[in-house]
Amino acid sequence: MHPLQFCAKQCTVCGCCAPLTLNVRVYVMNNILLEEVKEIKDLGVFYDTLLVFDKHICEKINKAYMMLGIIKRNFTYRTISRNCFIILYRSLVR
Image 1 (cartoon, rainbow, N blue to C red):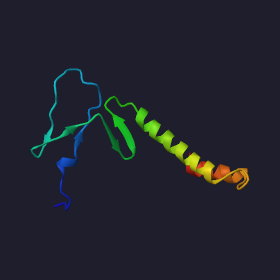
Image 2 (spheres, rainbow, N blue to C red):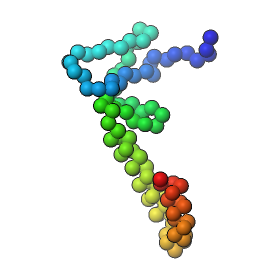
Image 3 (spheres, one colour):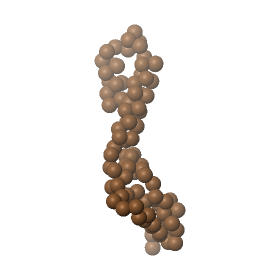
Image 4 (cartoon, rainbow, N blue to C red):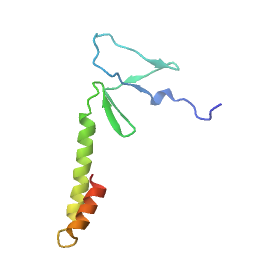
C-alpha cells in the first residue's frame, strides 16, 4: 500500500467551460463535498473555467517588471557595462 493518504479536503472542482444550464453540480469524494472554484493554479500555471490565460500572463508580466525594477534600482549605466546589463536582463527577466 502507498504510504500517502488521499486528502479530499484539499481537492477542488474547476469546470473547463461555461455551464450551459443553471444546474448546480455537486461533487463528493469520501463523503466530503468538494469546493467549486473559478480558477486554479497547477504547476505554476493559472487556469480558469474558460481556459483563458489572462491572469497567468499578467502574473508573468508583473514578475518580469519586478525583476527589471530590481536591476534598475541596483545597477546604473555607470556601475555595469551594456554587456553585463544584457546578461542580467536575459537571465532574470526573460
